[in-house]
Length: 156
Image (tube, rainbow, N blue to C red):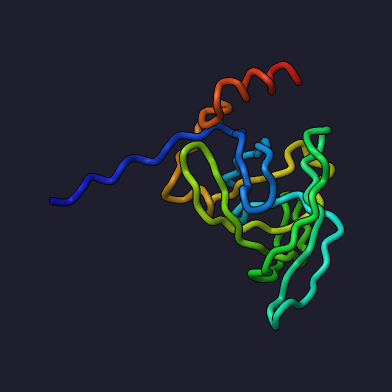
């Protein structure tokens, strides 16, 4: 007997996420169906070789005084030309890492970019969302625990 497939979870236009392989903190992320690839705020990005494999090292800064910046080292998955929302094309490193959104944990691809001028250090694009989530653009924090929502509201 086949089991029925569960409908996708509903997310708001912003949600709290975690990247357990990179940092222990929960991070606010913008959900963006206009972006194909997810993006992660990274600075001081450098490529290096380890054991004959290409790796990338970067500083993950969650911003807004949430936590100390963390130096991350991960195998590099790819390098691509990414076109940003303002139409500029950039050559970016792409990594794959665990993403936790609500009760869903899965591997997702992230381009590494300086997002210091953006409100959210993480952008979740449609490739990560596909077949897992539906987006309600009029709501926020649908997959985020209530205590985190209260903290975010108090921060403005």
